[in-house]
Image (tube, rainbow, N blue to C red):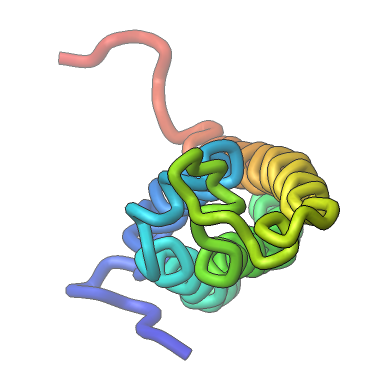
Length: 180
C-alpha cells in the first residue's frame, strides 16, 4: 500500500505527521464551511480535495504502522496504539463525506444556502408562493451539527492515538536526570 521504510527510517514515524496536521486542519475547514457557507464558496473544490488527501493519508500511515508493529518488541503499549489507530479511518471517512457534501450543497444551492441578501428570488418567491428557504436552513443546521460531532471525534481520536504512540515510543527510553 505504501512504503514501510524511507531512507532507512520506519515510514510510520514520518507519515504520522501528515495525519496529525491534516486531520485537525480538515476538521476545522469542514466546521468553518458548515458554519459560514460563504467560506465554502471560497474553498471551492479544495475542501473535498483536502478531505480525500486526509482520508488517503490514514491507511498509508496505518499500513506503515502495522509493518513497524511487527518489527519492534511486543509491547502492550504498542498494541494499544495500533488498536486506537484502527479506529481513525471511520472518523476521517466521515470528514471526507461531510467535505464533499458541503461542497456539493454549496454548488447546488449557491447563494440561497449562503444567505446572500443579493441572491435573486426563486420562481416560487417571485410568484408570491411560500418560500422554501427552510429546507436549506435545516440542512445547514444538520451540516453544522454533524461537522462539529465528526470533527471533534476525529481530532480527539487523533490526539488519543498520538498520545498512545508517544507513550509506546518513549516509555523507559529516557532518563529524568540530565546527562553530560
